Length: 152
Image 1 (cartoon, rainbow, N blue to C red):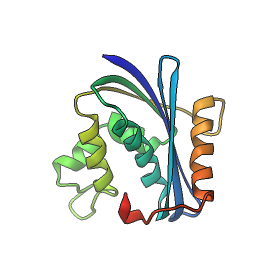
Image 2: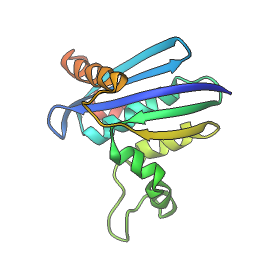
Image 3: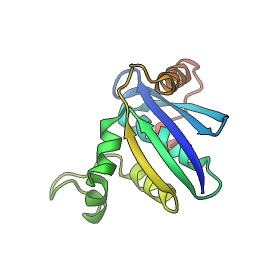
């Protein structure tokens, strides 16, 4: 299996508000940058989109290390929250729906067949790729070609 690193970040100007994602895929010496923006969304949705867009770019099963500064994303997967929500019909508890179930379902489906390792990195710190992803996300918001959130 090919070994791929996926660096991710999401950003929002207001929460909710205009939001963007930035993703960098690394395979050996090759790098691919992805970014996009949505008109009215949340930071957590953009964090998830950054992972989804990276996974959608893969054409075959890979060993993947996903780097994210989002505790929401990394903890939901590594601590089993997302599988618990899924097993309860996308409910957090008996009264509260899990947020972003549509994106979690996409992410889980895209991750199938891959070997995925999740790594949390401190945001706005010394991780060059995380900082680049942040710039990609912020610049995507600024470039004014934002899609409606229902196009996610």
